[in-house]
Length: 374
Image 1 (cartoon, rainbow, N blue to C red):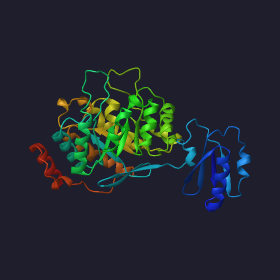
Image 2 (image 1 turned 90 degrees about the horizontal axis):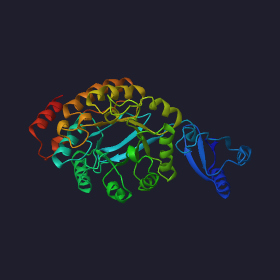
Image 3 (image 1 turned 120 degrees about the horizontal axis):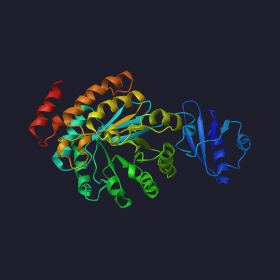
Image 4 (image 1 turned 45 degrees about the horizontal axis):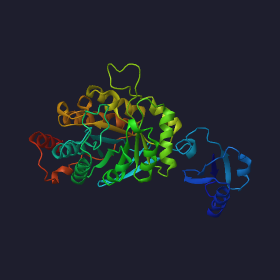
């Protein structure tokens, strides 16, 4: 249930309404929109008569019931206004949201060694990415596959952040590792396999960092949004939803089925920002550019792209990873579509690595010099 207040409502009136609602065992949450002040009511409101609330104050414009099972996540809860997630990085604040420029997240599936992660970070930064993704802890289907370097890889991500100024997005798998990941990550990722791990969701929410919530392999959109509701209900409003492909009846030609229809569907259901991961969504590097472009046209707020200096030698997910030159080319291509959609960041390609003293290989040196001349 939500209360829509008149925009010029006195503070004393709102506080009086708060006091009454709390005495009824209801938790009020205020949101100041463009045209109204909205108070969301959390708790058992089933038996409360709308007229009973309407009579609390002449400053109440109207009272509406939220029809969806997910409350805080619902678009109704914010009276139809989208929300944004602002993330602080060494290079400045970056905003994920419908009315903001496209945010690009790029990097390898897993952090393998220092030279590899720094080289990748420098290239994706120069090409226009704002965040580096890289797994320190990796959930794998087989117990015999590479599981990530763990805590030592977090240190390498911290080094990459220091060198490039990129924000860091990395996955947390276990409640025991939350604080270690939070010390490095600017955004904490909940992977597809943990979308249903509700105790993990609640504890990650309590860490206070923005959360990237990937859709489960077989999750419906409503189940996905209910998982997000756990995070918001735990007091953390900063959630980004990531569509990364779902398991369907035919996975012979692609790793998953990338559900691009989730973008317009989510726009009708939730105010939360949306990210698309075409790398996991297809499992094939050849398909990533077309799906990334399609996602931009469909209205995504962000893209997550897997990038590796040498995908054929990657310790995990090499077939779906772009190499460095392919990522540079992709960024040039998608910029045209993003500009048409009014979603391209208004800044030039960066050259932060000019001041870095970290040794990189000759291929990277040639690549970076070419980009600087451009």
